[in-house]
Amino acid sequence: MKRSLAIITIVAACLPMMAQDTIRSAESGGWGPAAVAGDNLFDGYFRTGAGNASAGGEMVSFDLGRNGHYRLGNEADTYGEIGWNKKVYDKDGCAFFVHAMINWYSPYSTGIASSVAPSVAMEQAWTEAKGALGTADAFKDATVWMGERFYDRQDVHMLDWKFLHHDGEGAGIEDINLGFGKLAYAYLQYDSAAAGAVTTTTTGVRDVTNIHHLKLTDINTNPGGKLYVSVEFDTANPYKGPSIAASPYNNYQSSDKNNKGGVGFAIKHSQDVLGGGNNLVFQYATGAAEGLGNGDQFGRSLASLNSGNKTTRVTDELSIQPTKTFGAEFVIAVEKNKLDNGAGVTANAQWSTIGFRPKIGLTDHFSIEGEFGWEKTTMDNVADKTLNKETIALEWTPTTEFWSRPSMRIFFTNASWNNGAQGTVGGINYADKTSGSQYGVQTEVWF
Image (cartoon, rainbow, N blue to C red; front, side, top):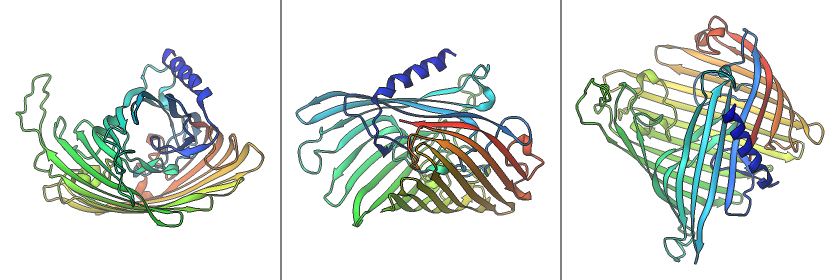
């Protein structure tokens, strides 16, 4: 309870700083209020709610466990972020900033008063300096940063899926002006205790993967169109010490046989259209970069850093707001994987999805919203899995525009899946079923 009161107090303190205009948040990946002018700013995100499942008990998440899930009426958790950003120095064209963010997470099943404490973590703690590289045209607006941060996050909102993100600890330089675009370099590091481009084949490993990431952004291609290009080089630094059973060493080991590094490539074209935008993305990666920006690897039983791992992905995400009372988001994506565990076991896999979320305003603050999603996964020697998910929701928001928040929703969700997915969708309550439904309420906020 004390933790909840503290969080509420922080959020309440932030509310007077909120602006009315909305922008896409680089940190959370969502849309939020435009930054307020000043030196001491808060931002954040949270979602929470409650629901009941047709199989009994609380609501669940109907998904195939790949690249997020169709989230409207399908998020069985409480999650939040509170960020703090402060300018600590500003003189003669040079400014220094500090950034920090905590987040918290708990499934609905833990409850507020549960003995199972929610997960709370310091997710971001980094500093940056703007104008510290000199006054030359290329560097006067460039920034140097160091620390732990969310880096280069790009997402499909309705899937809660970041098709690009290189979160981690490191350092970099951003916004070097080349005239035709902006150049950035980042060095980031992942160890075996983190999710992402690291080996997970041996409990207790202490290998490290180093990522060198280069990107070119803001390249004008056509009226309303811009290009993003990035390449990453992942290098491995396997643990070379002994394996000792005694505490605190606990048999720390290395999987250096599979830790071979990798290369990743991404290109994205963004186009203004119908009051929104379209993002067409192509990605290719090998080895340690197979997660395409420390995302989930396909087929965790075969997950490794072997250079034989390959991933190819095409994603097209479109959001539109042609009128004040109608907006929508669409997505279509295909990902193909070649998996190699370094021990002669290989597999080919594929994930495909098509989704659509329309929102229609009925009064100034009241809308009806739907979401329709289809997913399919295939893998050698494993039965194909398919899932259909549909949600209808009544929603109250400040305006009826698609990205308006905060949102308060009443929803009904239905899902069905094939026999190949039976036992893998919806948890234990749906282990013997191939369909299910749920209803509930949820609030979602970003600021």
